[in-house]
Image: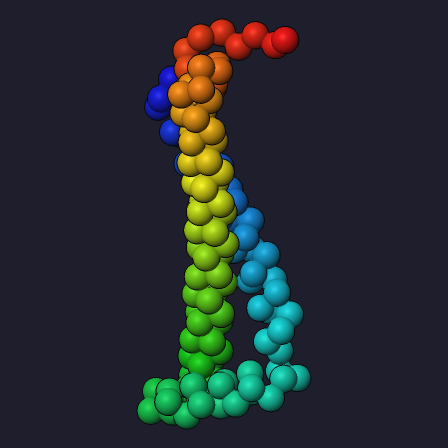
Length: 119
């Protein structure tokens, strides 16, 4: 059962990571076009760096810029995932704290082991 829950949890995290990566890449591709001056300047700088490779310098610069955008999208997706895990951790820690407090007061809690009866 523990292996199954671990596999489901890991699959969920990977699914969220893939979804968020796609979302951030879409947003970055919308924001970085040849109509934007900073994007054109970055492409020109990369092209100048690759001039020593000959006529493929522009294609190499475009590939490098695409890779930079992809890296940024993945970093943003991991940041989202870490925020989600932090919120989940705080929520679970708070839930456990409430259960221990209820047990100390003699009330049945979620980790008490006794059946919960409603009055």
